[in-house]
Length: 469
RNA sequence: GGCGGGGUAGCCAAGUGGUAAGGCACGGCUCUGCAAAAGCUGUAUACGUCGGUUCGAUUCCGACCCUCGCCUCCA
Picture 1 (spheres, chains in turn brown, yellow):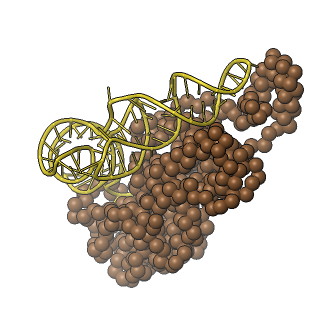
Picture 2 (tube, rainbow, N blue to C red; picture 1 turned 30 degrees about the vertical axis):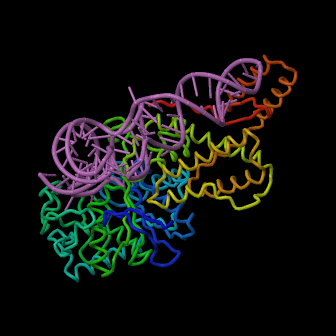
């Protein structure tokens, strides 16, 4: 089944093949590092991770870039408030971002360019110069340079906006009073006192780059003039990605991006996530409440990216249960396989990949997985699943885990807990139930749960902290 | 005002012109010293409202209601 994805540009599901056979050039808008990223940000990054992993599952190589915006109004404001140089202010948030990516099992991009790196600033200046030379941009009196949207007739094609119908005067800040047209956006922002020592020299005077040109410069600089897929959250469609198209295509004369994919925002408990509403969460907030990265990953990935996602604690709880079901299945399969080799290439889970081929239909893909879980559990109950069959299923599971990354956290069992387990086994052999229960409580206090099965004691991490809103 | 997305059983959520996946929750059973867990299994008047097209619509068309988002630097 061929890959097909919804293209924001055409508003249609289209078949996808990369320009260069076997290699997908993917650009994904990354975080602005002025704070810890929140779970809404991570919905976008997890959607992009699913996209990358599925493309790789289908045998394509993915060359992925994710930028870090480390200079803009918010980072400058934050650094001034903290009394730190810009780079010192953003560094901890960059580090935290990578820790969060790991916790959520998001694959690292091949490149994480930061806007302030000299080679990118140079390219931004080059691109702006080219735009000025071609008449697509102009220098205003204060030294800022603006893109002339009227010079690019297709401006609005991505968001499907008609320039003439845009409301005038909305959110046009005071420092942009000398633009030719309200829709013109800043390519280069002249230095102002509030910028402190954040400034670079340019042909138009000291200043700093506008946000949009960062992405155009880093995307074309690293991936080339024509990119296969560009992703982001839906709020990036306008003006950010619209501006990127205009800037890039006016410089290169080429089609900047062939496929635009955007994910919907998430809500929290049915409402827009907002600090004022008290429903604003970073990943760190959730980890502190005792949820694990993979549980958050499941909750954020399990709703199709083009649908609004309602993030709830009930949903996290459901994620935990569903993951445990998969864990148990995997353990049972391993026991049944008992080290056997698959005797044939099984394809029980073909429907999983086919669902993802269809515009990343993760719900249908997970349904296919869970149907297989139930069917094969039934067989194992009946003793009707052979060791090679179980081994074949394990091999398939392992392959789809390269896409889902839902595998259990491998926590090492402390020796103290192992000692308690041994004592408890002895107590149980002696049918000393009272001591057995005391030891069970001690193990629980140490952060582990012991279950008695027909095959003896089994240990699991947890229980997790009781999580509430 | 412009553009767009949603409304499917208690909750989350696929999907289809011919009476509807999956997950969670809930009940039953198995297992079990107890407990928990796990597995199997079951229930449900589930397709926003009103019209239309059709042999037949949840699926197509129209209107309406509710809800969410974007409209110039918020993923």
